[in-house]
Amino acid sequence: MPTDRPRKLLDQVREAIQRKHYSPRTAESYVHWIKRFIFFHHKRHPNELDEPEIEALLTLLAVEEHVAASTQNQALSALLFLYRVVLKREIDLPGNALRAQKPQRLPAVLSRDEVRRILSLMTGTHQLVARLLYGSGLRLMECVRPPARRPRRAQPPRSTMNARTHVAPPIRSRFTNRTTCAIMYPVLVISARRRSSSHFH
Image 1: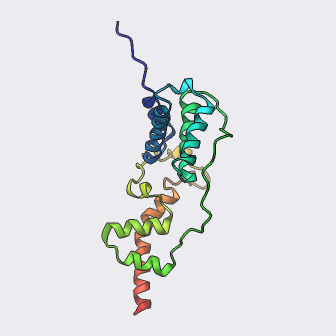
Image 2: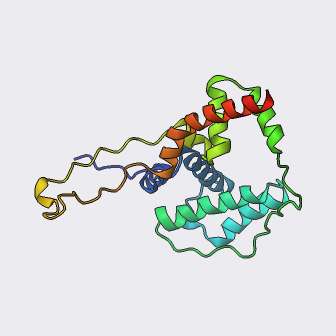
Image 3: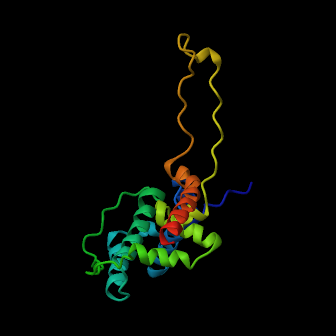
């Protein structure tokens, strides 16, 4: 009888990411860094590697490739996910790796007038997406890929109603804050545009 072949490591990684409900961008990044880690050590299996090999890759990223601190942290998170979640191995944080330095500069922040001028140059769907991202704090993929609608809960039977007040027990709202914001924001945008146009005229 044919025996089942063991699943490939990257397939196990993708399945573990799906179980954790990580975003597609996070999944793509984790798979990239795990492949980079394996090829950096000449395609050796990660079970044969340990903290010194992780430190070697992190040091390379900081010293030779001069990556940003966030990029190095992302690579470290991917490797910790590989060992702790996929391989079920407890591994310590590498303490001897050289860490990428965070830039000592203030971020550039646009004023409200600058944001208003940028949004006025956009039209249609692009303007709506930009306004949603700016006004509600949604991430890009949350805005362009809305979450799947959950099935409606069944109404409670009449027997569960309070005999004195005849009021059914409260049902928790099916809408999250982000969903409500995404629904109501176009209305707020229209009203804000009307107020701004009347103000400038």
